[in-house]
Image 1 (tube, rainbow over the protein chains, first blue to last red):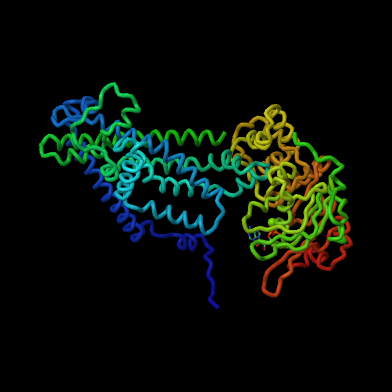
Image 2 (image 1 turned 45 degrees about the vertical axis):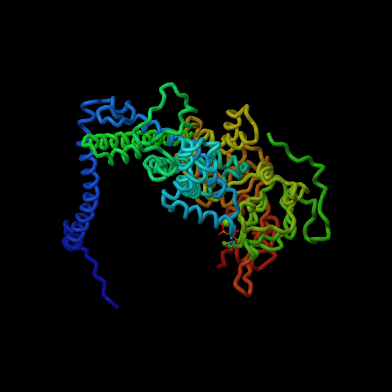
Length: 314
Length: 282
Ligand SMILES: Nc1ncnc2c1ncn2[C@@H]1O[C@H](COP(=O)(O)OP(=O)(O)OP(=O)(O)O)[C@@H](O)[C@H]1O
Ligand SMILES: [Mg+2]
């Protein structure tokens, strides 16, 4: 048996409780962690700063003209209007079709489907699909939406591109929604069923409101992903050349079924390949526009999420 | 308001051969040879008991003996567990609760439930109470219903000035009374309570017990409890469940003794009942 010594006098207690304020291992570790954070941030910040610095002359010279001008082979006149319109239209498609479809599929899988071999097979496949390279979705989009369903989509149009991106983000949408639904405590469901609610009433009034903030966070990431994609759009038929003008008085339907559209990442891609010196600056400027747009799309979604969060409380 | 079942239904029942100990007409809820399996193993087996209207029936017994399982049969909450299978017969006013034409959603509007852990919706106090009524199609008189239910649950005075604040901000005891108010707001016939006071301090527990005694004038109450004094204080009849362990190690709950509470606590028929209530038990 070991003898146990308990310090009793104030002096002994003080001695027993005193310790080094400075712990070497802890401090070293904290330093190393901070360093890795800074180095990854540093790359990002350098990149951003460099881009903004290169782009600055364009915005200084032309201001909003760059944003509101059409694509052109003449660097002095070239702008990103079609890119912005195209990207927003594509994002709209992803949100309007991908969001309800993805959320519905997840609700079915999590809340309605019985847990059997078939549903597990589906879930596993959805997970695999989320990891498929985006260029593969481009090939799918080309085969399915441009060629096979060309009669409906009118070929290489925003509709085809939007549907391709929707299919691309659908698995991610389903997975994030499923996870959000699974995180809703079972006690809430029991409480709702306990007062005689049906399954749908339970989902509609309790499960979805609780899961919605997480679902919307997932949506933000999903939209960002779709916004930045270029490879699938190249395959599904977006234009990369400079030489097209949308007619100024075209209706929305005409615009989205026009066979000539592009998206901001493609504008960047195309300009980066141009030999002229001026396009270096233009490319940087287009990147800045892309980032600003992306941030505002995300900010809108986050605002929406916060409003839902407030509402769910009531 | 939900309508009560007409009294004529009381006599329309079961084949009297299947059980000897239970008179089919003798209760609002009558279980006969009720068995519940989770997967392939029975959690409770051959339970027969009759619950009387406007009484408090207590279910007691060691942990894992199937009290919650039994309780959840009464309003078909076990339907929500995929692996659970209920066999035998359970009648409510003589109507088989598990017959195909019975909708479990409707059952739960007649037979409400209060859970062990207070589980208010993360919404306002008002919304918690009004939800059950709203989905039952009641659109008018909600304010009055909320006040009435909260008053019956002895919570009105404490929350009347913050009806539109989140229910999560209430104390545990207040939350549990809110859950009771929520359960009675749909004017059920029977209220099931699964250890409603187990998370509460003695004073809050006492309030819940007083409340139950109040409520039994209007409702039939079945309560699961681990607290012997509580069962003795509030219940009219007590059912003692016990587990038997089979050769392959599976634990199955059985109803050992079901009688007036005074009999169970002063003069039990079975040795195991006496051991359990006097605390001489695992
Ligand atoms: N959802 C479930 N799936 C599988 N088995 C379950 C499930 N719920 C309960 N059981 C099993 O059924 C048996 C009875 O459980 P039950 O919850 O009814 O006991 P209880 O008497 O309420 O216990 P306690 O007093 O601890 O709450 C236990 O052996 C338990 O493991
Ligand atoms: Mg239990």
